[in-house]
Length: 443
Image (cartoon, rainbow, N blue to C red; front, top):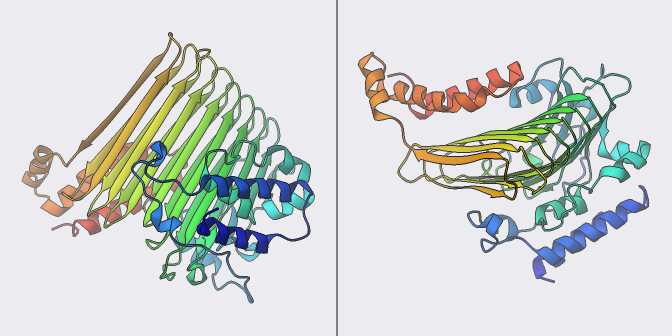
């Protein structure tokens, strides 16, 4: 056992205590053993070839200290940090700890369960035991194992059959000045039964006053029954002092539809993993994302779509806009099992480089073991179209503003896949503001 894992082992021992169902300490212990055995990945690992986690592995992130008084944030502060609407159900966590005073999720259908993981372990331990750690078991995944060992809270959502949750469930994670040096390990467990419908928005933000590194290591498990529909949006706007690793694992039954959108603009180093298994016929998955980074930021997106049943469809569109000396990574894999005839899969990654120092590594992959399929993949890397830029300048637009408009237009295609109007318009406004500021506004 390495000195680093010994230190985490000591932190783990300090976290353990009485209470909770009897199976939970066993699950945590197994996860900790798995973390100790795996260690942190290196660039020799194929899935981490372009991303070094040395800045995370070289230090130990402790648990957030207990708060002695009320949180300093107000509801207005939360609304200023995230994009949302007053009618959304909202659960707010500050440095990984649930804040009831900032949360509100009344008005849900009576049969729908939305609660914190801590409460669910007390009130519905059977539901949690049946699903927690089953999809995201940490096998071969260091950060998932670390999350399972250290997760002290999160969100559990259960939507019964044929139930529609009209308003999005907004899960807000905020890091404040007390997050410096802290490891935050939130867990999300979603069980969407047959013909149910749900929209989830996860927002990760900071108050801007952290001033030192912290580490968010989030894991989500989503189980979808026959015909279920889940829209899942993740907005990552962490402090640029932060490190962020987020993993989502999904299992889709027959005729289910999973739509994921990832927006990544924060953190010094971020990694977003989306893994989905299409195990029922005619299931559909749509994975989209936009990453906007500059300076020395590093953003990595990894997807793995497993077609394990006939007649399923998958669509992926990821776009990156890189400035300064930033580094982007996209590694997407589509696997088609021999049984998965009539598969229809398309994977696309486009990257726009705004500086000579920015770089991207992109690696779309197909592994096809069926003969009656339609699968394509492609990737492009380029710079702003000089002909279009010249045309816009000839129409009287300033050079900076013309560049901002062209950059925004590149991002708009993937932003339009967001089906929640408030979220789409909010992210469009953020993107446009960022580009006009970057290029100096209209001149």
